[in-house]
Length: 229
Image 1: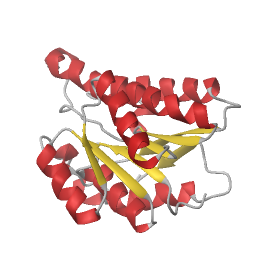
Image 2: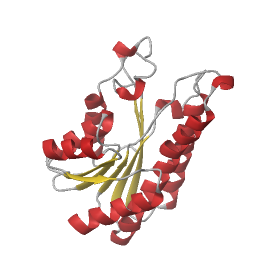
Image 3: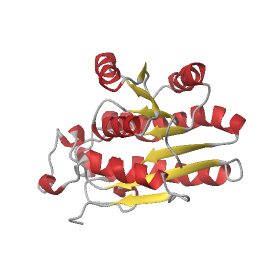
Image 4: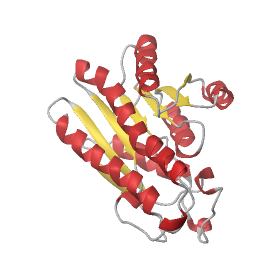
């Protein structure tokens, strides 16, 4: 895919992998629509990258639909939609899980992906083209001790991704699942892993995602493991 002038929507775009992707897509000449919940951070990002910023919460279906509507109103269509927004809670034994936080994590990691995909497909189906990228995790490939709540949210998003890919087969729409390993982001500020220094930079992961998009036939399931694994 030639990325120049492509219209790209990114949720969770103000930090971590989302911010890295916003910068990388901008450098490719894309028209980037950055979305997140914090207005000041969005304004700062829009100022530094000259992208279009839309404040929205992925947990709210109507706000994802409005994000898509505003994008199309400004640029005419959507080429690429990246469901990047995601959160985690500290790894802990099942008996010690904070279930209020676990429910909120599911709202972001699974329902946020579902709502974003629905909003994108509204316009992609009309046009008969488009690419949806769901940022999942290697935790969606293998369960780990003390990671039951987080892994469950990512397994749900993985099942959704695979199902939607089959659902839109023949509609001219690609659905890509990306499974990154550990990245050096604020994701781990509450509980820093012992081997954090071996984690990948978000920009490294972002480059691999974009390189895959540039292929004549991008991988639908892109696993990006850190070198130490």
